[in-house]
Image (tube, rainbow, N blue to C red; front, side, top):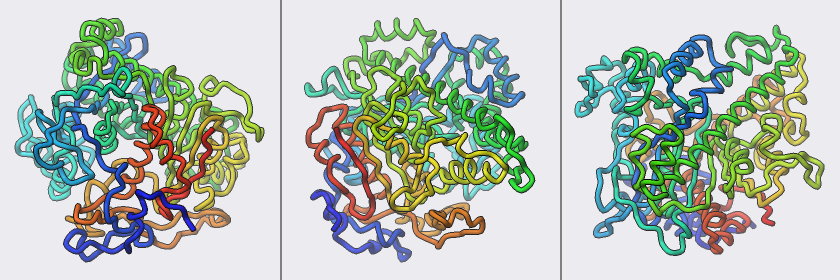
Length: 613
C-alpha cells in the first residue's frame, strides 16, 4: 500500500474524470494518474506575497564576452565575436528577476489558489514585456520562428511599425494563438511593484534561488516557478546564458558598448548568429563520428573518430565551467542588489556595470539574504549539481530531468574521493533530482548516442560513461535515467531522486501544455499539431530493437481542483517539491523537512528514493 501524505490524500481520492464545463468532452488526459483534486495541498498553494518582476544585467569586465563559443562555435560566429570583443563589450548575462512584493488583499487572488495575489501597485506583466521591446532581437526571431505572435497592433517598436507590419503576417492564425495565450497573456507578476519587507524570521533578507535553463532555453521557461517561489518569500533570478541560450538578449542593455558602436544591422546579425549557434549536439556528431551534421550520421557507414569522445566530454566540461561561472556572477550581482544603494552601485561599477545594470540598485536593499539554492532543467540541472559544490555559500541544488555525468564534470567541482560503494564521490551538499519516466530526449543522448551509436560505429561506450550505473539499461519505474541514478548514488550528503510518472523532458518546465490549457482548447486542439500524448520510450531489452515504438499514452497534464478550476499536475508536483526543498535547506523550516521525509507524497504519480543524513 502506497503511503500518502495527509495533505495530498484528497488529491488521489476522486476518479480521474473531466470536470464538466471546465475541460470539455475530451477529458484531462493521463487518466490512470491525474486524479481530480478535491482541494489543493496547502503547501502547493501560492504564498502570501505578490510578485514583482524585472530584467537585470550581470556584467563582468574581467571575462571575455563569450569564452566558450570562442572555442566551439562556427567560423561565422567567431567573426562576430571578434567584432563584439573589439568593441569592448564585457561578459554580460541578462536575467529575469522575481521578488516578493507588497500584495493587495482587498479582493481575490488573480485566478484562484494556484495564482499569486495582485500587487499593491505596478503594471501587470506580460511575457512580451521581456522580449519584444528589443527590435533588433525580435525581428530575426519573427523571421525564423512561429513561436512568436505576428499581430500585436498595440505593440510599437522605437524604430516604428507594429509586429503585424514588420512580420508580413505569415502563419497569422498560429501566431495569434501563441501570442494570445503566452506572450500577450497577463502573468502573475507586476512590473515596478514595490518590494515587500522581509519578515524578522528571514535572517538578513529573503533567500536567493537561481534557475538555470537547459540547452537552447531561456529565462522565460521559469515564469511560473519564479512567481511561485517569489510568492513564498524568495528572490529568484533566471539567466539566459550566452553560451547556449536561444534568447540571449545581451545587447538589450541600452548602454551596450557593441550596440552603440555598430549599425543596427550588425546587432541584428549578431543576434541571428547567437540564436542559431546551438553547437552542443552537432559537435557531438562532429567530434565523435566526423559527421557534418546529425542528419549526415549513419552508424552502418561511420567509424568512431579516435579521441572523439574525449573531445566531446572536454567540450562539456568547459561548457559547465562557463555556466557555473555565470551562475556565480549572477549570485554576486543579486547579493549586491541587496546592499545599500551606494554600495550596490560601487560594487557593480567595479565590474564594469552599465547604467542599466546599476538602475536596480536600491530595489532590494536590505531584502536579500545569505542563503542560496540552485535549480535548473536538463543542462541547468547539471549546472546546479556542479555549482552547489563549487560556488561558495550555496546550500542545496534541485535538478529537473538530468543528472550530472561523471566525465562531463570538471574534477574541481567535486574534489575527489570515493563513496562507500566505490564510486567517485559526487556532490558533498544536498541535491534533489526530479526526472520523468518517459524522457526520450535524455535517453536519446545518453543511451542512443553515447552508448548504442558509439558501439555501432566501433567505439567504446565506457570511454564516455565509465561508471557501471551510467551504462545500465533504463527501466521505467526503477531506473528511467541511469545517469541521474548514478549521480544520486555518488552523492555524499542528503539526497533524493523523485521519478514522476508519464512525464517527458519538458513537462517540468514551462511548456505548451501549461500555455494552452484544455479548458479552452480541448484535448488535441493545440496549434501545429502539438498534443500531450506520445509513445512510450523503449526500456530494458527493448532499446536493442531499432524499430521499437511504444504504445500511445497520455502525458500527465491537467486535473480539476474542486470549484477552483484546474491545476497543471507536473507543475503542482514540481512546485510542491521546490518549496519543500528550499523551505527546509534555505529557511530551516522543520515542517518542510517532515514533508521531504514523506516516503511518497503523491502516491502512484511519483516514486521516491531518499536518504537524509
